[in-house]
Length: 258
Image (cartoon, rainbow, N blue to C red; front, side):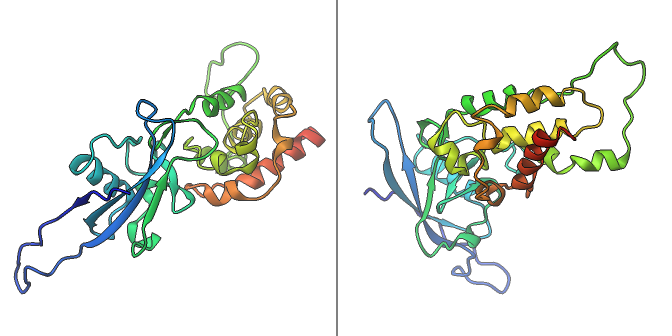
């Protein structure tokens, strides 16, 4: 196994300090590599870098890409836990690379980084998100109303808004869906994220499309496939109570009250 190494110069001496005073540690990142143009098989590659442990895994990936191997491929955008594009498996758990501090994942041992599960890997840490987004589109994640276009704002009480506040936090990172064992074994399952986004509108007092969404989720690949193992809730970087939302959708299907 090749081990590319990036050496970092020791810090410059400052007032009251010496050239050996440095916050940096040497950490090994073991990254799962896949390039369909080179091989049909994925391999693991180690990169040893010097980095401040208070930095994030995303910072380490940038160092590796910019200073060691420019072919390393991964998605990222805002780098602040909002866009959700850098979800990946870090030390066996789904996380956002931009929110995971190196010091919090035991840098004394090799830190494993691999793509999220259940979706086709296109290259390195990049997966095909189309099945995930298709499930999202299928639940109609937009306000549905009847009648003429309103002439004034649709008002809503704070209490009504609070009813679905938690599920408005979803950033579509797919961390929850790709942590679900049912999704791993059945790519047709809508998955937690789609159900969460359906919940956001089913329980919106201004919306009139609840019955349509419930019928979509009543499908054999819908909400009933959930086995309530809580992987999704544990994986969510936004702290959404996903399993609770799924149970509320199930209850609404049975009672038709929402």
